[in-house]
Image 1 (cartoon, helix red, strand yellow):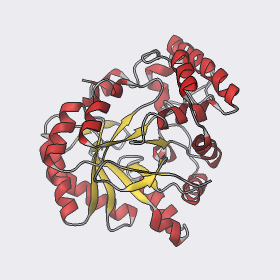
Image 2 (cartoon, one colour):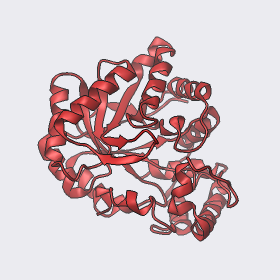
Image 3 (cartoon, helix red, strand yellow):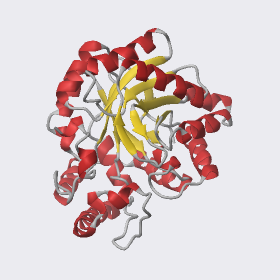
Length: 336
């Protein structure tokens, strides 16, 4: 399989058509396996995946250290091709809780210093605030990242989960390569205002949650037990009647996938990829098995009839429940 490439915006780097989202390798979705995580990272690099997405708060630094180990033990040719996308700004406490976001310029530079050390690199390819700090103008946060670009510590600037007005203000401050935002068959709010704004400004999308935390992967069942440390145990879409409703949507999608001889996950990922060459799906795999299945979506071609059938099976706004619990939804500038 030859990995196609896409370019992040008009100013950003050329990256693999699919990126690897690494958060699940450091918790968030139940148990993790360090050896399998590193093997999965190596397998992704071997398959031509160049974009690795992380956050300095994933496992309170664990994820960056994990990626550092994987890169250090990968063949040099693969290591040199890796591009690191890092989110910063989320504040954690020793119990794993969340304490808000810090976008102050001094904090930005502090976060970057620690990420560079943990990752063991001399620059970060795309650096982005994980959320908008409501106490700090986006111009100040982006301006601080722009200073890091000038000094060579960062190559490109990204954004995450911000709305159209914030995107415009950020882009007026410095060149923006991409916006990271949840975008999936059952998470389509970016289509209303955010995607048109990005396309007007020449900014790409790195789409996370393309399988809605596994909800539309075809592997979730109504009786699945989730541990307290699993994000999905607190997600409205995985609760009670919401879950049953959403899994019924998955079964409708499964019929279309079976007709094409592919899996539910593959058709869901292919749908995201088909929405534009300016969209790069982030695969949230934490095992080689799930990575291999997801990469199979590269071979799935959806024609007009397929897209119409998918739209009928899973219309926009068909999902039951918000994508985050209320307190976390309130932190999303993208949903205001």
